[in-house]
Figure: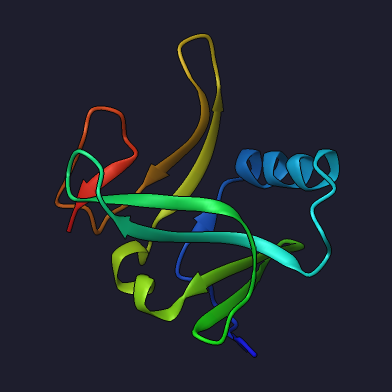
Length: 115
């Protein structure tokens, strides 16, 4: 079972929280699933962000962010510590935006970075 921590290493803006809650409701995401945020190798700059719904696994930590269960592999914390996830809904772009202070450089699309 995943361990439960009290202080999440990342934050979701109010707009991002509203959008995640809307997706959970619209897509009927199962109650035992949480929002998984992490990183994986690849992307233009070397690492890209993971964002999706998943069940917590043994190596995960879980956090409660204003009623949203956040699920993250413990090994990913060092890459996203202090990161803020926002949601933009404008004419030029619509989607989640990652503001990561750990990133040494990012790509033009904003979905990958180097640490």
